[in-house]
Length: 435
Ligand SMILES: Nc1nc2c(c(=O)[nH]1)N[C@H]1C(S)=C(S)[C@@H](COP(=O)(O)O)O[C@H]1N2
Ligand SMILES: [Mo]
Image 1 (cartoon, rainbow, N blue to C red):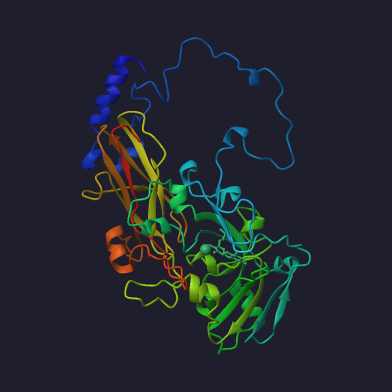
Image 2: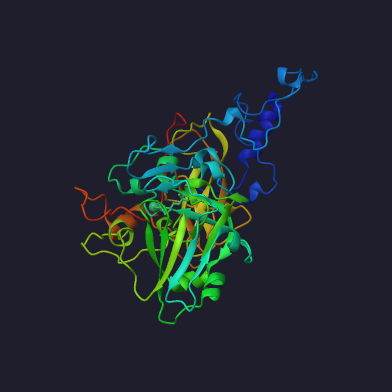
């Protein structure tokens, strides 16, 4: 960009309508008013002026390319975009893989990067032999194979999945200096296709006495959870496909229970059994691990909902801004209750706020991408986002959340994992260095 074009861009950007302190700019400027974003601002990075002479040919333009393979993998130049693992050697305990939100865009988590938690490894299930049984308080117990399930009407649903333990580092009394992947990587979003559970329960018939069902997996821990029949008849499904292809092995191949908006753990993978019952079973994962202990020593009996939440993915920890100029703040918002209504963004640690643009489509219980133009003047800034859902729920500040739920328990209690369901606001500090 030559000097005068650069000057013009700077002037145009200065004239952009500010909507909150520390450089936040009206979101409507994103909608085609020609914001000149960072990099084109004459700092010598990002886009640069095209030279007048014709393009030269690089080696890859001068020979026949690689063979086309039956199942393609991404470019080798993307090899660093990976999940982080908690148990790479498969020791006999649980394994986590976290989604790299800071390296992804849009709202769909690619299947290879969907987060996963497996409490006893990933079973190698033969899809021909796998069966799902629905029994208990039903009129007619039934057994389904993968093939018989495919004869029922299929539905697709885009929904997020989040572990109740996602964002647990936010309970720390000291601010954690970690990436968005380490903080919030136990949440992902995909399009799931399969059969509504209500369709199958119509086939079996449900005894009016049945108020709960127990869902059980075919992996070695036989993970099982109690689910209210009301949820089963609402929007629960047996998912067979993930973003158009069969479920990934770690995400429940060949079939899983999907409970949109409910705690990840209840979405039982490798699903082999659904038993209709009168009372919840009080299994390990609902009485110990995911029952939230409160500061007064009492506990929530059940905690199913993943509440309204948002976090900024760019810029975020580990990235560096390359000099003052215009940037786009962008992130993800979602709520287990329904669609996102709005997201507010602050660049001054929550003193002033401005409304972000929501990227279409805004789907119920799915990741929603928000965007906010920001003019960074090179000074210190604290970036935050705060989401509202259509039901009127608002994401709490960290102080509000901690007042209700307490900080990290020390020493950690033996009988419970108390640090669950943290949906409070994340802050990213930006130093004058741009880091
Ligand atoms: N059968 C079975 N189901 C399971 C698990 C498991 O280990 N076994 N992990 C649970 C937990 S703790 C979570 S958070 C979600 C994670 O789903 P994902 O691995 O597809 O992301 O699956 C749940 N369902
Ligand atoms: Mo979980």
